[in-house]
Amino acid sequence: MAEKAIVPVGVRLTTDIEYRPDRPNPYRARVRWFDPATKRRLSLSEGKADEDEAQEWLQSIIEAAEAGLSPSLATMKLAEYGNVNMDLALRGLELKALDPYLSG
Image (cartoon, rainbow, N blue to C red):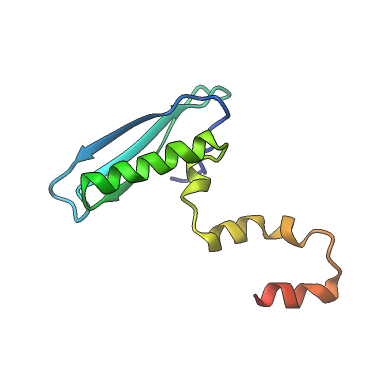
């Protein structure tokens, strides 16, 4: 997915699990929604080893959306989140403070 999927507050999510036996992780869990601004249908999916794991992933996405997080943000790795938000985190710091903050 080239762009990050963002779910606006109040948008209804639809979910499904598809079984694809020819894959290493044969259960594809998918969440979809319509973006009210662009009228485009967006989706996010992830392969899982079994149906229970796929259902747990979907439930975590639904709970994150109910808390105001987009599926892409809820599934983002911590390092990726840090890279995306580093400018905001470093805003207002003196130059001499950047090295200690960035070393961590």
